[in-house]
Image 1 (cartoon, rainbow, N blue to C red):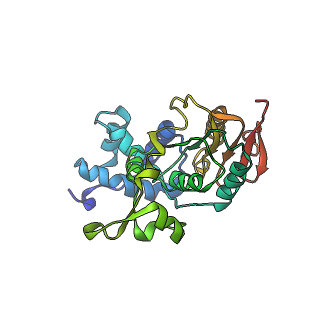
Image 2 (cartoon, rainbow, N blue to C red):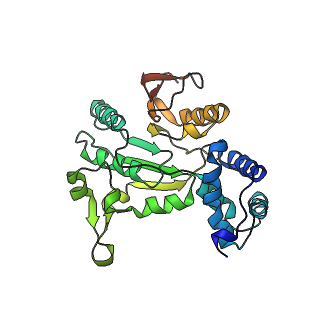
Image 3 (tube, rainbow, N blue to C red):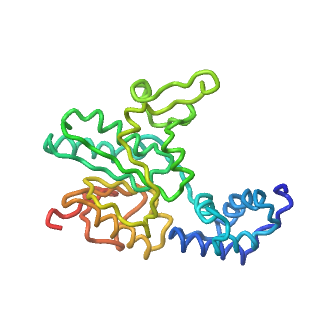
Length: 274
């Protein structure tokens, strides 16, 4: 079956699919996303030899095909990122790390790690802060299993390493050879410092440990107010007293969650008494 054999996505079907992605992932999609939904799901209809979206909706809703519900979530979650994105957060992190006792053990959570550039950037920064004398660890999670596979591999096309300096590339990347000559790979020593895990911000069991820093950036924009509150409340529970939460530059907790102190726009701190 080819793409042209699939009937167009109608308005009623679009509403059903947006209802499902809201139910499963808390993501709100308005009518401006109709073409995106149609285009991304069409490939699954072709793969399953379906000629209409209604039949695919039944499969996803009833979870009648192995892993199809997760594939549906993977297709409708956006994963745009780059190394050291929104650099002021990394500058702030470095300043705070230099102010902390050198023996203090540190834990960081990249809560929507996408294809891995954020946690690898964090690991590079941690390696370069000379005052750190105790072990540190990074947890990297995402709702998309597909994008987590990419993150775990840590292999990037050489034209897709936006944000990395020449020094970072030299120190932390391996150049591919022969058929892989156009690719760069994160060095194994850095990869082993990061634990990648599938995680739904709304539903998954929270990590048992507490974190000094949580990065959850450019994700809240996809949630409505109710789900934003739930996500931030859950993340705040995972912060140590005095710990920091970083959100995207275009995201604000104003009027949504007021139990974290605003340090700078998009940087919040949990009370030391909490």
